[in-house]
Image (tube, rainbow, N blue to C red):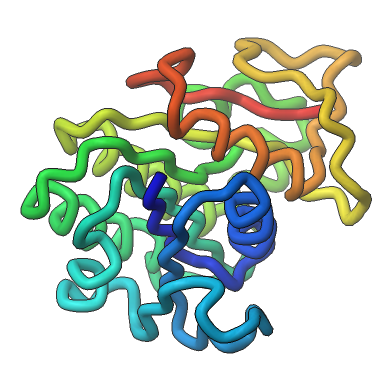
Length: 209
């Protein structure tokens, strides 16, 4: 399958690229500096530039079977890059007739904010996570209104450990059995698996160990 991966040099993006190549996909990567992936020449098709640029998005999307959006930003970033970049990707997909989109969001975006423990809802979400959630909320609205065949992945906090391959997905409440953390490798594996699946078509899936 021909896959375009946006945000390829990010925390989840790097795992997406590595796993997609391992699975035999033909990969196009988008990033400001794709060379940071350190891949052999010819391993991927690279499109360098700002994801918000319509021409960059169009070049990356052209000829693809599916698109994975894994745009990430620092916690305190206020630029709204996720939403703006996703809007450019969606427009490019609509213009090119590419329908399948799997997009990285976060546990706590949209209605899932109400599932979070008290300290997240009352202390972290209105302060340190304020701009991140605002960006993800706007991003999710763009995806939901796109008319595309979309899936949203909402992982908990990223854990630096290795992927386990065994994690919770699709839950709608958080109790003591939910760790609210997951390895980026597990998130990447889930997102790649959804490209050819319909389990979460037009749905958002919460992910956690």
